[in-house]
Amino acid sequence: DTGVSQNPRHKITKRGQNVTFRCDPISEHNRLYWYRQTLGQGPEFLTYFQNEAQLEKSRLLSDRFSAERPKGSFSTLEIQRTEQGDSAMYLCASSSPDRANYGYTFGSGTRLTVV
Amino acid sequence: GNSVTQMEGPVTLSEEAFLTINCTYTATGYPSLFWYVQYPGEGLQLLLKATKADDKGSNKGFEATYRKETTSFHLEKGSVQVSDSAVYFCALSDRGGTSYGKLTFGQGTILTVHP
Image (tube, rainbow over all chains, first blue to last red; front, side, top):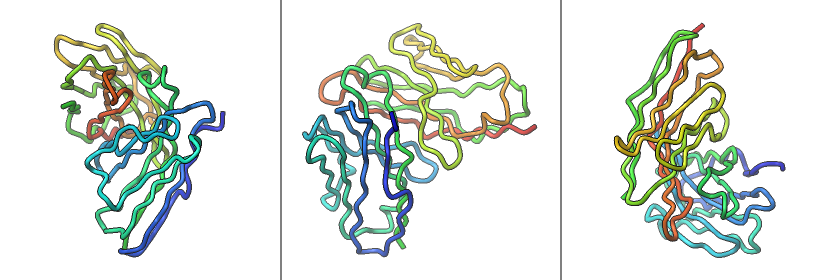
């Protein structure tokens, strides 16, 4: 069990650029979640997948955000035309369905800074 | 909707002092409750959990009891150590419908323990 892996750890980008983050969940976990955490706040839910199906999206996820999990394994989160307000820590987590209600495993996150 | 409210921080204590961090919640269903901890520069780690009323979660000397009548899940530790300095998040997971497993977090409480 290597845990949930997120890449890159840090990303600095200029406003208006596109960025993509990757999450590799624990291999036997078929549920994958994305959260966003801004400074001084708790994480906020963005979206989740069961296998390759995206089952729920938060209203926080504007049209500039898109997430995929093409083969039910790793996932990517893309932000197009980044804005300064997108600066945050993006967290990924995974679980198996029968354990989702018992807490799940988070990755270390990708910190995005938009300048 | 669901929400979690944590006591205002930050909290500063001397080593071996008693710790309480208050957490109250509102939920549309019957949630599971969690405390997560975030050490400096690291991701979120599950500290403890409780899945039904009157359950007590415990780990590393920390405890919290699921109080349905007061909708609370206060975190306590009898004797804190410098290594407990971190940000603590209370969270709930709604067990119903398509949101199964989605976490709602409080805003976090910064704990600093001095020698």
